[in-house]
Length: 220
Image 1 (spheres, rainbow, N blue to C red):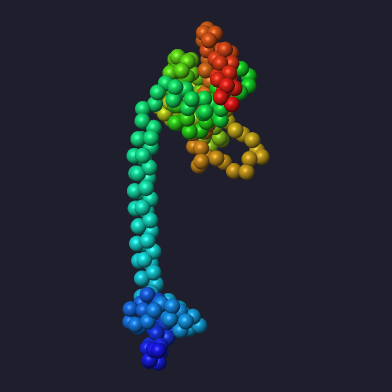
Image 2 (tube, helix red, strand yellow):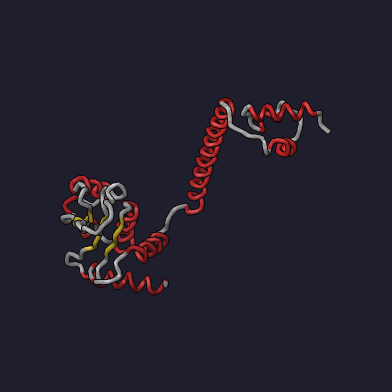
Protein backbone atom coordinates (compact mmCIF):
# COMPACT_ATOMS: atom_id res chain seq x y z
CA UNK A 1 0.00 0.00 0.00
CA UNK A 2 1.34 3.42 -0.96
CA UNK A 3 1.06 6.65 0.98
CA UNK A 4 -1.46 9.07 -0.59
CA UNK A 5 1.24 11.76 -0.88
CA UNK A 6 3.29 9.46 -3.12
CA UNK A 7 0.40 8.98 -5.51
CA UNK A 8 -0.35 12.69 -5.45
CA UNK A 9 3.27 13.52 -6.26
CA UNK A 10 3.09 11.25 -9.28
CA UNK A 11 -0.15 12.87 -10.43
CA UNK A 12 1.31 16.38 -9.98
CA UNK A 13 4.42 15.51 -11.99
CA UNK A 14 2.30 14.03 -14.74
CA UNK A 15 0.13 17.14 -14.90
CA UNK A 16 3.31 19.19 -15.16
CA UNK A 17 4.15 17.29 -18.35
CA UNK A 18 6.75 14.76 -17.25
CA UNK A 19 7.13 11.29 -18.74
CA UNK A 20 6.76 7.98 -16.92
CA UNK A 21 10.54 7.49 -17.10
CA UNK A 22 11.06 10.81 -15.33
CA UNK A 23 8.38 10.20 -12.70
CA UNK A 24 9.42 6.63 -11.84
CA UNK A 25 12.88 7.89 -10.85
CA UNK A 26 11.27 10.25 -8.31
CA UNK A 27 8.34 8.16 -7.15
CA UNK A 28 9.34 4.68 -5.86
CA UNK A 29 6.66 2.61 -7.60
CA UNK A 30 6.49 0.25 -10.54
CA UNK A 31 5.58 1.56 -13.99
CA UNK A 32 2.51 -0.63 -13.97
CA UNK A 33 1.34 1.20 -10.84
CA UNK A 34 2.04 4.55 -12.45
CA UNK A 35 0.01 3.49 -15.46
CA UNK A 36 -2.91 2.61 -13.20
CA UNK A 37 -2.68 5.93 -11.37
CA UNK A 38 -2.07 8.20 -14.33
CA UNK A 39 -3.91 6.78 -17.34
CA UNK A 40 -6.73 9.31 -16.88
CA UNK A 41 -4.51 12.27 -15.95
CA UNK A 42 -4.36 14.96 -18.67
CA UNK A 43 -0.87 15.04 -20.18
CA UNK A 44 0.90 17.64 -22.32
CA UNK A 45 4.68 17.13 -22.65
CA UNK A 46 6.67 19.99 -21.20
CA UNK A 47 9.88 21.40 -22.69
CA UNK A 48 12.10 19.03 -20.72
CA UNK A 49 10.11 15.99 -21.85
CA UNK A 50 10.10 17.11 -25.48
CA UNK A 51 13.86 17.66 -25.42
CA UNK A 52 14.38 14.29 -23.77
CA UNK A 53 12.20 12.54 -26.33
CA UNK A 54 14.10 14.31 -29.12
CA UNK A 55 17.48 13.23 -27.76
CA UNK A 56 16.20 9.70 -27.29
CA UNK A 57 14.98 9.55 -30.88
CA UNK A 58 18.30 10.85 -32.19
CA UNK A 59 20.19 8.32 -30.08
CA UNK A 60 17.85 5.56 -31.24
CA UNK A 61 18.26 6.62 -34.87
CA UNK A 62 22.05 6.66 -34.58
CA UNK A 63 22.02 3.27 -32.92
CA UNK A 64 19.82 1.75 -35.63
CA UNK A 65 22.00 3.31 -38.33
CA UNK A 66 25.14 1.82 -36.79
CA UNK A 67 23.48 -1.59 -36.57
CA UNK A 68 22.54 -1.32 -40.25
CA UNK A 69 26.07 -0.31 -41.27
CA UNK A 70 27.59 -3.20 -39.32
CA UNK A 71 25.06 -5.62 -40.82
CA UNK A 72 25.88 -4.44 -44.36
CA UNK A 73 29.61 -4.85 -43.72
CA UNK A 74 29.03 -8.34 -42.37
CA UNK A 75 26.89 -9.25 -45.38
CA UNK A 76 29.56 -7.88 -47.74
CA UNK A 77 32.29 -9.97 -46.10
CA UNK A 78 30.09 -13.05 -46.06
CA UNK A 79 29.20 -12.58 -49.72
CA UNK A 80 32.88 -12.53 -50.62
CA UNK A 81 33.42 -15.80 -48.77
CA UNK A 82 30.30 -17.40 -50.23
CA UNK A 83 31.04 -16.51 -53.85
CA UNK A 84 34.82 -16.66 -53.98
CA UNK A 85 36.34 -16.57 -57.47
CA UNK A 86 33.95 -16.96 -60.39
CA UNK A 87 34.79 -19.76 -62.81
CA UNK A 88 33.98 -19.66 -66.52
CA UNK A 89 30.98 -21.91 -65.88
CA UNK A 90 29.80 -19.59 -63.09
CA UNK A 91 29.89 -16.67 -65.49
CA UNK A 92 28.19 -18.71 -68.21
CA UNK A 93 25.28 -19.62 -65.92
CA UNK A 94 25.06 -16.13 -64.44
CA UNK A 95 24.97 -14.59 -67.91
CA UNK A 96 22.26 -17.00 -69.00
CA UNK A 97 20.20 -16.04 -65.97
CA UNK A 98 20.51 -12.38 -66.88
CA UNK A 99 19.65 -13.10 -70.51
CA UNK A 100 16.59 -15.09 -69.48
CA UNK A 101 15.31 -12.01 -67.69
CA UNK A 102 16.58 -9.16 -69.85
CA UNK A 103 17.74 -10.55 -73.19
CA UNK A 104 16.04 -10.52 -76.58
CA UNK A 105 14.16 -13.72 -77.36
CA UNK A 106 12.90 -12.86 -80.84
CA UNK A 107 14.22 -11.45 -84.15
CA UNK A 108 17.14 -13.88 -83.97
CA UNK A 109 19.37 -11.14 -82.63
CA UNK A 110 21.55 -11.26 -79.49
CA UNK A 111 20.52 -8.19 -77.53
CA UNK A 112 20.01 -7.04 -73.98
CA UNK A 113 18.22 -3.98 -72.60
CA UNK A 114 18.87 -2.48 -69.19
CA UNK A 115 19.30 0.77 -67.30
CA UNK A 116 21.89 -0.63 -64.89
CA UNK A 117 25.49 -0.31 -66.22
CA UNK A 118 26.55 -3.27 -64.06
CA UNK A 119 24.15 -5.56 -65.94
CA UNK A 120 25.41 -4.28 -69.28
CA UNK A 121 29.05 -4.77 -68.21
CA UNK A 122 28.23 -8.30 -67.08
CA UNK A 123 26.61 -9.04 -70.44
CA UNK A 124 29.68 -7.78 -72.31
CA UNK A 125 31.95 -9.82 -70.06
CA UNK A 126 29.73 -12.86 -70.56
CA UNK A 127 29.75 -12.78 -74.37
CA UNK A 128 33.52 -12.17 -74.34
CA UNK A 129 34.35 -15.09 -72.04
CA UNK A 130 31.74 -17.58 -73.22
CA UNK A 131 31.46 -16.71 -76.94
CA UNK A 132 34.71 -14.87 -77.67
CA UNK A 133 32.81 -11.76 -78.79
CA UNK A 134 35.14 -8.79 -79.25
CA UNK A 135 34.16 -5.28 -78.23
CA UNK A 136 34.21 -4.35 -81.92
CA UNK A 137 31.11 -6.52 -82.35
CA UNK A 138 29.17 -4.61 -79.69
CA UNK A 139 26.94 -1.66 -80.58
CA UNK A 140 24.63 0.38 -78.35
CA UNK A 141 21.57 2.50 -78.94
CA UNK A 142 20.34 4.57 -76.00
CA UNK A 143 16.68 5.08 -75.25
CA UNK A 144 16.42 8.56 -73.74
CA UNK A 145 13.80 11.03 -72.55
CA UNK A 146 13.18 14.57 -73.86
CA UNK A 147 15.09 16.16 -70.98
CA UNK A 148 18.09 13.81 -71.27
CA UNK A 149 21.42 15.18 -72.50
CA UNK A 150 22.41 13.01 -75.47
CA UNK A 151 26.13 13.80 -75.37
CA UNK A 152 26.46 13.28 -71.62
CA UNK A 153 24.43 10.07 -71.82
CA UNK A 154 26.68 8.58 -74.50
CA UNK A 155 29.79 9.63 -72.58
CA UNK A 156 28.38 8.08 -69.40
CA UNK A 157 27.55 4.73 -70.98
CA UNK A 158 30.81 4.59 -72.91
CA UNK A 159 32.79 5.17 -69.72
CA UNK A 160 30.75 2.68 -67.72
CA UNK A 161 30.82 -0.14 -70.28
CA UNK A 162 34.12 0.36 -72.07
CA UNK A 163 32.33 0.48 -75.43
CA UNK A 164 33.83 3.24 -77.65
CA UNK A 165 31.56 6.16 -78.43
CA UNK A 166 31.86 5.43 -82.14
CA UNK A 167 29.89 2.21 -81.47
CA UNK A 168 26.83 4.19 -80.33
CA UNK A 169 23.97 4.79 -82.72
CA UNK A 170 21.94 7.98 -82.60
CA UNK A 171 19.72 7.72 -79.47
CA UNK A 172 15.99 7.14 -79.62
CA UNK A 173 14.02 9.80 -77.76
CA UNK A 174 10.77 8.90 -75.99
CA UNK A 175 8.41 11.65 -77.14
CA UNK A 176 5.19 9.89 -76.21
CA UNK A 177 2.62 12.42 -75.05
CA UNK A 178 0.59 9.98 -72.96
CA UNK A 179 3.33 9.48 -70.37
CA UNK A 180 2.36 10.85 -66.97
CA UNK A 181 5.76 12.22 -66.02
CA UNK A 182 9.41 12.27 -67.01
CA UNK A 183 11.80 9.60 -65.80
CA UNK A 184 14.76 11.98 -65.93
CA UNK A 185 15.34 11.89 -62.19
CA UNK A 186 15.15 8.10 -62.11
CA UNK A 187 16.95 7.40 -65.40
CA UNK A 188 19.04 10.50 -66.19
CA UNK A 189 21.10 8.55 -68.77
CA UNK A 190 18.27 6.48 -70.15
CA UNK A 191 18.33 2.79 -71.04
CA UNK A 192 20.99 0.97 -73.05
CA UNK A 193 20.02 -1.42 -75.86
CA UNK A 194 23.14 -3.51 -76.52
CA UNK A 195 23.38 -5.66 -79.65
CA UNK A 196 25.98 -8.11 -80.94
CA UNK A 197 26.83 -7.54 -84.63
CA UNK A 198 28.31 -10.45 -86.58
CA UNK A 199 30.58 -8.30 -88.82
CA UNK A 200 31.08 -11.19 -91.21
CA UNK A 201 31.41 -13.86 -88.53
CA UNK A 202 28.39 -16.12 -88.97
CA UNK A 203 28.95 -17.69 -85.54
CA UNK A 204 28.07 -14.30 -83.99
CA UNK A 205 24.92 -13.78 -86.03
CA UNK A 206 21.75 -15.85 -85.98
CA UNK A 207 23.66 -18.90 -84.78
CA UNK A 208 24.80 -17.11 -81.60
CA UNK A 209 21.21 -16.28 -80.73
CA UNK A 210 20.11 -19.85 -81.46
CA UNK A 211 22.93 -21.17 -79.30
CA UNK A 212 21.94 -18.96 -76.38
CA UNK A 213 18.27 -19.92 -76.73
CA UNK A 214 19.24 -23.62 -76.87
CA UNK A 215 21.15 -23.21 -73.58
CA UNK A 216 18.18 -21.46 -72.03
CA UNK A 217 15.79 -24.19 -73.21
CA UNK A 218 18.04 -26.83 -71.65
CA UNK A 219 18.02 -24.97 -68.33
CA UNK A 220 14.29 -24.28 -68.31
